[in-house]
Length: 157
Image (cartoon, rainbow, N blue to C red):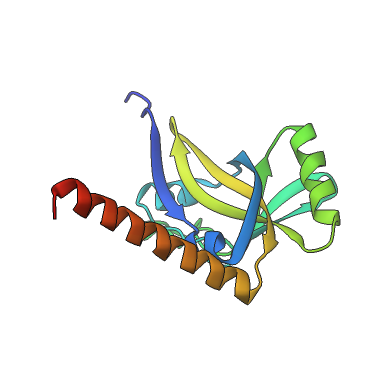
């Protein structure tokens, strides 16, 4: 069977874009078991409470929920186990320097297959305050209203 091409999205963390200011982004590979890959290929995963940490020079994805494979046997995986992420050493060092600064964390944004390999998109994030969130919502609504007005003008209304 030929290898699939392109990017197939499995899960996105939309809440992260709302709750954090996102900085640098990285693409990391995942170390998975067979039943985890099969469950992901069915499109079943959640990154809602997930985060990443750097421990002893290795990056780990924690709290990502990949449900058990329904046709799995006793070899099924734990749903919220920590999973190792594959990055270059320079990228790991950059993530470690960024997280030692106060108020920063590593947040997964998306889980997807890229040319058949499971990947996760990470971002260095700083938490937003409540007024930041309201300001973001107000800007988005203002842009939406401006686009509507422009579309109505172009239609000749």
